[in-house]
Image (cartoon, rainbow, N blue to C red):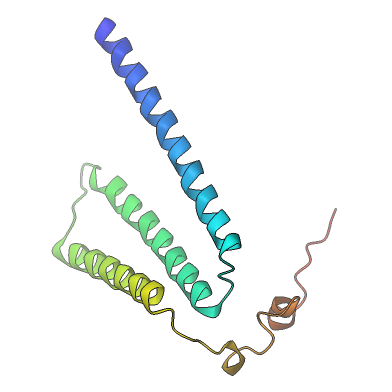
Length: 130
């Protein structure tokens, strides 16, 4: 019984520490965005790529969840496709961050980065209040 309690306490401590680490990472990243004024097009591209990686993490989690079902398996094609997708995304993110390419948003979306520009691009998106 003591071993069970010790294992449970260790699990709780790990979960708590992981939660604190995530909060610190997100908070420090957000602070750096505002302190370094990285409101440029390359940073927006990086954030889009990071968002795609988050969606890929969800897909990988779902695949892992189905893998442990009785009929679950992870085929060669799935392995290659997931690995290539991760490698392309990681390489793209590193390339954008290190290269900081100059992207002229006026070529494809004028006024997108001006205040209220997204409203002009997407139209009125107000949600009615019941």
